[in-house]
Amino acid sequence: MKKYFYLIITLFALSCSTEDDAIPNQNGLSLEKSANLKNSSPVQLVKAWNSYSFYRGFNTWTRKFTVKVANLNYDKSVSIYHEKVDGNWEEIPLSYSMSLDNGDEIWEGQYRYYAYTPGKIYEDEFVVKYDVNNTTYWDNNNNNNYKIEEKQIGSFFAEPDLNVSVDSDFDRLYTSFDGVTTTLNIVADVRNISPTKEVQVVYTTDGWETERYFSLAYTKYWYNSYDYVLTSPNPFNVERWTGSVTINEEVDDIEYAVVYKVNGQQYWDNNYGQNYSISK
Image (tube, rainbow, N blue to C red):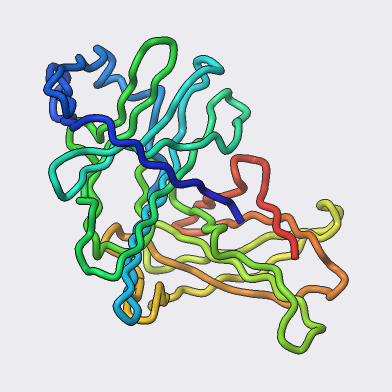
């Protein structure tokens, strides 16, 4: 399961509506935007996850982000600028996750906020910022900013070609209550391209000398908490598929990928060619 870190640094208020706008900070100073604002090719929001839960007066807001950047230099910073309810914007730094074969990098991060009061601290809009080589690149969704409302629970696919995505935060390899049976549980999200589709997991327990498949099932309701439920497809037309299989009890480590079959096409999430791995 991937681990994210949370760090919020209040910097300045942000507006990404046009290339020519300046970014006013909280001291009333002006920081000019880079001329590369509309050229968002070096940085792209891949996906985001949003959830809100409530249980016995305890509120939890969670938003996770995955971003792809071109590796233009070792020295770089990638962050999310997020709107707050007070009108200010805060920076959520992302952390390096992996390098891809084409030279790009994946960066990830999240914010998670807990409170016993119902008042949230973050609003709906956010953008992505990439600082490298004394240049700032923005992904601001073509000057529209990204927007996810509080009750829009589930995955949002920002990358146009992303049609299937493993949610490794909820995947598990565990020994069942009987103390003997080992179970592999996989959770994946798919873009609802057609009502007729198939989602499968391909996995190996021996370094791909052999491979096995099992199917995931469409999950109409997925319980995010006691009081809030993700309904498929969610407001972003993304469905949640889940499934499990019994594994030899001696197996401690598994590699896997997910394939989504729809309209005669196959879409894979194999963790950018590196496959996913999970251990007891």
